[in-house]
Amino acid sequence: MLAMNNPCRKISTFSCYFSIIHSNQEPKVNCLLKGEIIDRESKALILFKWTADHKVKKEIVIPIEKGRFEFLLEDAFIEAYILAFKEETDKGGFMPVIFFPQDGEVNFKIHSRELAEKNTISGGPVNKELMAYYASFKEKFGDLKDTVLGKMKMLMREKRYYTKEVNNLFKEIRSTKDPQIKTETYQKIEALKKQGKDLSPEGKKANKEYQAYNLKTSEWSEQYINDHITYLSYYWLFRKVRFWRNGEFPVAKILKQYELFAQKFPHHPYTSLLKKRIQGYASVKIGKDLIDFNAPDLGGNKHQLSTLAKDKVTLLNLWSTTCSSCIGKSRTMVPIYEDYKDKGFTVIGVAREFGNTDKLVERLEKEKFPWINLIDLDGQLGIWSKYNIPNASGQTFLIDEQGKILEINPTAGSIRKILRAKEVI
Image (cartoon, rainbow, N blue to C red; front, side, top):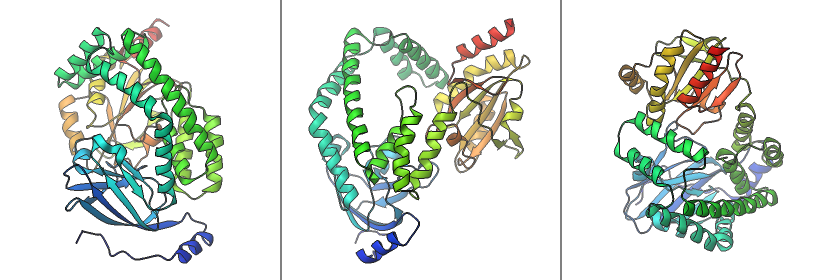
């Protein structure tokens, strides 16, 4: 018999309907997850909410026995959840299986990563809508996707997508274990990208075709969100906001869409979470005021950001001990700090750690970063959310003497240039 966390209890359709009509809260469900694993050998799946950082909130481990699994998910909102193979998440990267719980059963057929498009989910109107969405997308864009991505993959495989210079830089990254060298090399690649010198002529053509494909699919998805005020579309809207990468964030446009969903689902978890994300995009941008907070150091002493940064050019360095690029970038800031710490410049480090501070103590003893270092243990202070990077490992923000954001994710070179200019003044 397959392992379960509790015997499944059935909820009548009438009682479920009654609870929805007579409650001011968003309905919750009890959902039996049952599935078959095809084309791969795995021992366990993990389960967590799509909105959760599984490093902060301990995920549920579901054992796989003889290629099958079963688990009772109780008292859940109708929101996106993720199933993923545990061995993949342990390595840091995984192929998510998105689904929505419902009262009753949700059934899965989950394939290997290479055959993920064959995955099926059945049970409940939202999952039915999800599978129809996938099918419609594939029918409309499947051939174009295969052509465009196939060409890009071929060029990358044959080392023809990037210029020779960039390919050599990637080779340097692969050959070193030093996080500082990796960070500095990535910065060189980013500089070439900003100058339009990262892609070969073939790569530029392929990238242009990819951007056109992205535009078409984005427009199609946008229309779907506007035409369907449903749980699924609420997820797609949240996903668009969460992973926004298309330049300036259109606050007014997104807010208008959000209000339609908030009106229909006022008590849904996405309503409060998405509101904070939209506010974050409006607040965390160049020219806006810093977002203040209090955080402790390792001795338990509380410090206020605005007090530490008063009348100084300040680099707010949000990082973690698991983020090698964050550590590498911090190392590049040490010489700048030493040169300008007595000339109106400071660095404030805040590490987000999970469980305890042991790794932070060990890392600080090794690195000896000379600036003040604070801690946001388990993300309880919400600093990452306040700065609109809840799922990122870290980010840096350069703040001027008046508390305005000067740059987001500045390089050591750009900071030094700003500080030299202020010296002249």
